[in-house]
Image 1 (cartoon, rainbow, N blue to C red):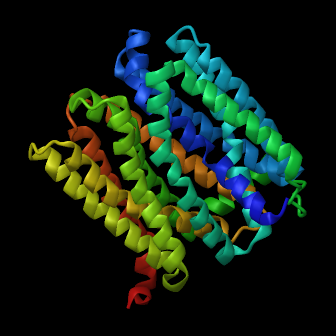
Image 2: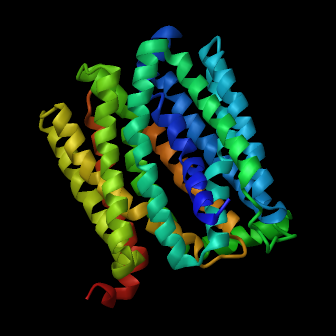
Length: 396
């Protein structure tokens, strides 16, 4: 398999985590009804999935640095497929939540190992372009997955959604085993030694640039995840749209991510990583403030939610690929660990943020929209303070 085809496959694998969340979002209210539990309990299938997904990457990153990328990724995908079947057969909300955690522990291999493979194949600038193209294609995932999930749910029921996910995992296992070679030719024999891991993590977290890129990605993704975890209850529960219509609303927001990644791949090389991220966080902050202002002023409609979130998502699409490239680019020998720590902080922070937002649920859109605005404004402020302010002449 040529490296171009490998990148296509890796793009699909990286999107597995988002697919696992986005595709069953239209089913959340129905799952709550089926198991007779409150929405906050069902949301644990999203938040605990994300936390387990993030934590697993702290293991997969060093594993791939030590033993290679290929078989680590195959093993993780196999666990993902098996857990997806367990989700489909769940007899209680507790079993479903547990199976979702296992599904996340398997699926966590995808993003961190796939991104490390890209770093094995390319230098930082080329990797940034590849990440932008990957993000552009992946943005189709949240556009199409809720629509597909809504259709599968309305036609076959929510359990069928997990059967589709299990089938996707099985297909990826077969393709990885058949056509992808090992790319890690500079394996780190100390990658799994606790002392070495501690020193490497300390080195990452003491790097000001690394922290800036990771923190901004985490904040922007946190705002998006507040929408992901809360939007079905706002749009379906409050505004009364159907699961399939919700899928189209969610897809419209995801189109913003695609727009941002297209702009990033087209103009990112000329602007550079930092200017592109500055543009993205500025859009996120502005759109978040407008979104919250509409909600607090009592203007609640599908358009009042979707339109500002579309702009926020453009900012996210500009920010994430460049933040990822900026974070892991300076660390080629421990690209797996650098990607894993970045992803862990991003996803764990987002999950905890959404849990906190859920605690303030009052049956309106105000908690969700306020959380999105706060995330965007804080991302812009942090990037300015940590990255741009020390380089005042950059934007001149």
